Image 1 (spheres, rainbow, N blue to C red):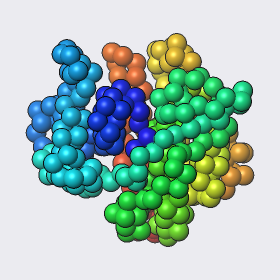
Image 2 (cartoon, rainbow, N blue to C red):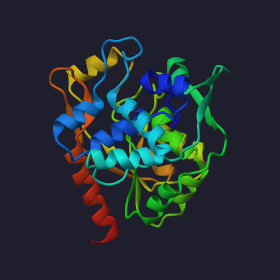
Image 3 (cartoon, rainbow, N blue to C red):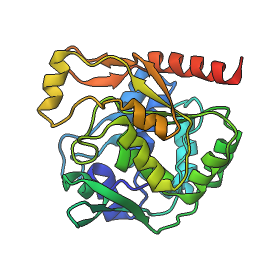
Image 4 (cartoon, rainbow, N blue to C red):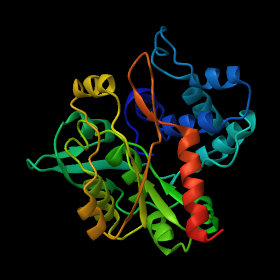
Length: 288
């Protein structure tokens, strides 16, 4: 709900809707409909006055919000169209704006501007300061058997959800196991130079409480080709500082959970490998 760049940012500024981009990606990822429907939802217009750069899914969600009356109903209706498995729930329906204070004293407003500032983030918050949580999201957290945080951009994808006080409180109060999936690579403008411990400290600092008891970390370093590719973007593998993570009271789960695109060299989490590791960890923790 803090996205203010690209197609979502344009719709937010021009029409006044809540940003649909991240919701669209979640719906597409969980869609059980035929591949063509998912591709249509993710299609981005390459030409046309006013259309270029917009994704069809963003326009669809915007139209559905107008028809149904709010984004929550639009998500539910879109989920039926795409035969989504599970639920996609925003943390809040408030019009959130991110801000960040950098180590050089600058205060940056807006999610896209924070990354573009290329600074070291020391503090982050949002306006309004205490946005109310979506009740269904709180209910889902309270009923969850397992809570997984991440992966994703630390300051502009993960932490914004935890800036909703009721969301962080619900996770902290849950008796179910909670694990943080750490990013494989650092991200310029957000986490350059960060270790695993730095990621954990940033989350703890943002919500003022300990939310998870374990952290999942990639075991092997990516290939030399991937390292060269990412070095050009001032990005490198997130190093594991075991002593710091231990002092922060987290258990470390090491596993090989990446896949590399042989053409682009992009590194991503392998969904199936990640799911297997998470399921094994959950069964051990629960004594199943």
